[in-house]
Image 1 (cartoon, rainbow, N blue to C red):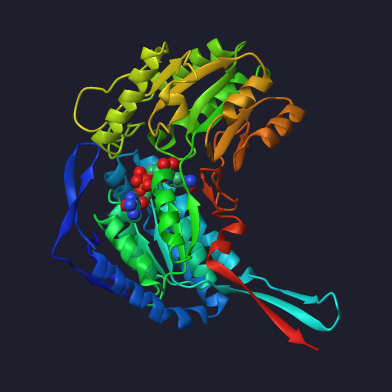
Image 2 (cartoon, rainbow, N blue to C red):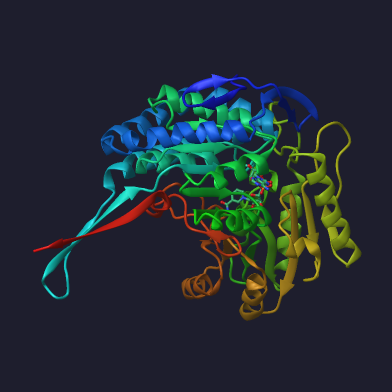
Length: 473
Ligand code: NAD
């Protein structure tokens, strides 16, 4: 297990370190090097020094490095899955699913690396030619959250390598080990020394400020909470550093009176319970037509109540713990607030006995619109349900939030699906599907959920700059 800093192709140790905790037990299982401002600047020295030669490599060469990294991820799948399960507690099967998802970003961008295009136009006056090309923007700073420890990294590393940018990865405090394992894997796949550094740190603001203030950074790609994203946009603004922001969500899940209820319930379980609800695209609010709301609440309570919480490392566990005690206390507070305002607990509603930061899968019905659980990102296994009389009030409720990442809608009516899909103020809409994430698609939000898109044809754009040549004839 790698537990040092990875700077310029070399593993280093530090005097100070920080602990990594298994949330299934609450116990420390590893200790990791703790990067500071000086280490950050050394990583940027390495990135800046490697930038020109890396940008000059053949796109095919970068493509094949990514393809080898994809193969290596599959070869090391069990080891990587186990590491992330120790870090965040979720069942091994889910962790293996994330390895596949994360690897797929490497394969997708290995295919995109050789498809970066330009343009040749005749100037309107006919007197000269307009040639456009795309060049790597330069050293990139990649800041990732803990909830998907591998894919949130590869979703940035893939396009950065494809574009020809050098990079510094700063993983979340809770999940440094999987990012370090990825650092080694990418080096093994042929990423040259200096192109990629990994800086685990317990001092994120110090490291980030040092990198931004240095002036050599060209793009900051962040995935995490909206408050931190806003702060980093402000900081990056001081040096006019391009920012790409994948921030928090508050996904509405709409079930219309003409929905296939069984399909909606299956989709709801996926949209709610993937990663113990600790997902930016987790269904946060169930907005259900009043004619089917009782049947939907009963069905969801039955399905969520049947799921077995337990340490992810143990066979048979179906729901992992929350990331830490603070997260569990927050989720319990949201449930208590909803109950105080008149919501009914249909199942769960408390933490189970025993070690770890578990919280029982919970369904709440008759949840009023002003309950915090409807307004804040829950990030836990709690499903609040509210009933509405018609399509108009359902869409209005869905849009009544500053977040705009994803929405889900279940209906059998194609016209309604398209009408509602267009009216929902989100970057993504799942129509009769509880899962939208796919490396081949442009993932991202509107409003306060972010700026930019990751994955798809669009995901490489954050790492490219357009250059225009005016060529006199
Ligand atoms: P977070 O904002 O607390 O942390 C994210 C990253 O930012 C971590 O690496 C952390 O160390 C770093 N960080 C925190 N404060 C910082 C500061 N002052 N300066 C510099 N860096 C700082 O988020 P989290 O708890 O790790 O992740 C959960 C959040 O991420 C949720 O809101 C979730 O919706 C969001 N998320 C969004 C997406 C998306 O694609 N839109 C994907 C996954 C998670």
